[in-house]
Image 1 (cartoon, one colour):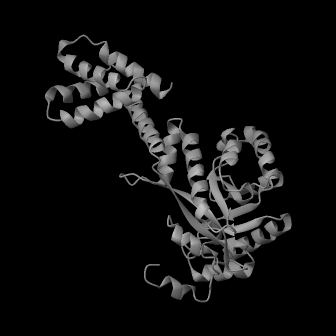
Image 2 (cartoon, rainbow, N blue to C red; image 1 turned 135 degrees about the vertical axis):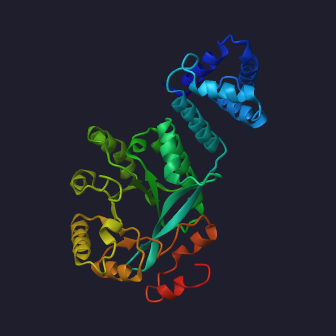
Image 3 (cartoon, helix red, strand yellow; image 1 turned 90 degrees about the vertical axis):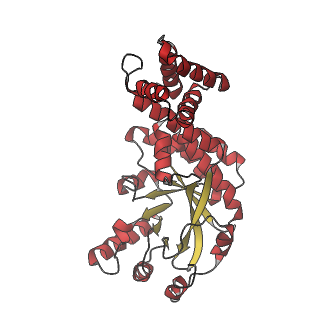
Amino acid sequence: MSVRVQAWGIIAAVLSDTDPAGAAVRQRLSDSLDENPGVPERALLEYLLEARRSDANTAETIESVRQMRLAPPVLPPKLAEQLDAIRSASRISALLENHMLMTAFQPIYGLEGKAVVGVEALSRFVSDDGATAELWFAEAEAVGLGANLEFSALGSAAAAARDLPGSLYVSLNISPTSCMDPRLPELFEHIELPIDRVVLELTEDIPEEEYLQFISALNPLREKGLRIAVDDTHTGAGALSRMIHLRPDFLKVGRNVIGDVDKDGVQRALAACLVDFTDQIGITLVAEGIETVGELKVLTELGISAGQGYLLGRPSVRPEDWANWNTRLDVDGLERHLASPGE
């Protein structure tokens, strides 16, 4: 059941009540409907918020809101869940309408050439509740707006990429479901970022029953220069068995592979095996989450192609930072660089 249908059900149940004691409540809800024609979920949410703000000390309002949330004879079952869904949909819709979304870029270094070769785009949300990007995307997915938010993030990142050095590729996080959305090829027709600079980084596993559809949807774009990355930090997304059919351009490995690689022989052996594997099948291996100079030096010695992490550069929303990412990486002077004020 959609959020809009749920909202109409709640509103109809409240307005159909004939108890004289609730007349004022029903009138306020009716007024809210008049102010938001055709958008019942917003009318209901604004009514609830206004009622709590303006009449917080009025016993009638408190009792009415309590009854709306709890009274089985008046309201449909699972009212709390319905109201939560309406609030979430309203929050996400407001975020999309008001463009409350920013893009941070984190540099990706080529470890052999010691220079920045690309960036990963990370979403940042303008809100006062401190919610992380993961929570925003999860909330949007729960109310059926996940794809809308993903495409808004993709568009924001593509627009921000105009301020990046032209030599850098741009890795955009995307779900397999959105890869099969017809809006994806349309996106590349309307953005200024050339498709051969784009890497789509899969954020989750591809359902078995959708695998062939996924391949068919992306092949025309890959023929135009689009590249694909799988990330083993997401459950199943980097399964080695899928490499044979998907043939991604990048394999990204995280702390589960490279953490303490300079101290743990087993971790070092695992990283070395992955270097050999990706070399043989022609995939670029990227180490994520590099945190120490020791890890960086060992990964470089093993021949890992590229790396990113707080040691090499934190995500930034500042174009002046992005402009400096075409400089070389001084590994020997890295500790001194990190100790500099403001870094």
